[in-house]
Amino acid sequence: DTAVSQTPKYLVTQMGNDKSIKCEQNLGHDTMYWYKQDSKKFLKIMFSYNNKELIINETVPNRFSPKSPDKAHLNLHINSLELGDSAVYFCASSQGGAGDTQYFGPGTRLTVL
Amino acid sequence: GEDVEQSLFLSVREGDSSVINCTYTDSSSTYLYWYKQEPGAGLQLLTYIFSNMDMKQDQRLTVLLNKKDKHLSLRIADTQTGDSAIYFCAEYNQAGTALIFGKGTTLSVSS
Image (cartoon, rainbow over all chains, first blue to last red; front, side):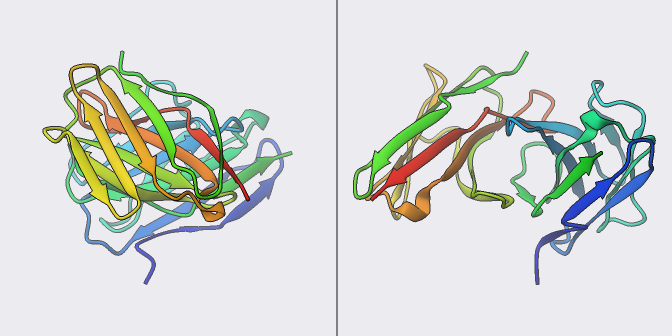
């Protein structure tokens, strides 16, 4: 009965590959997010998304794209992986949008070789 | 732009109190948050405080908010080795679309 789940937990891949990370929430929340945590543990927003609006952090390369098949899922697709993409990626969700408490998934550790 | 600052390290002995401090720039966030990250684990929502409150107590945790100075602190009473983790302070950005995190304070508890 995990609230926010992500798969896979670990992902090791070669440069240039395309990969996806899946996120599911069973909280009935309307808004989902992707955050990136780098090797120094700094956390930065990548995307926030509800069924009306996708907000993209302008520093995120367009090789990254969120895809939402339904309200409970927000997957992260990454094209042409680079070494600098190695990080831990966290999915989160909140009830509404502005100002609501966010609940995080366990993270996906991506290693690009 | 919005910014959240924290000291990076804190070392305490088991049984002592720990105080983790945070300063922030944007005062429009309705709530301010503390998240805990244990080694190799995800982000756990630890506690949060409504921006109109000065203090919130939750068992061993006390959150103090000084809105005038834009200063937030987390006090952990009777700190245990299991409290060793990284603690992140966070607030919403002005648009209310994403959390802005501090760089995290690594709390090390020695027995």
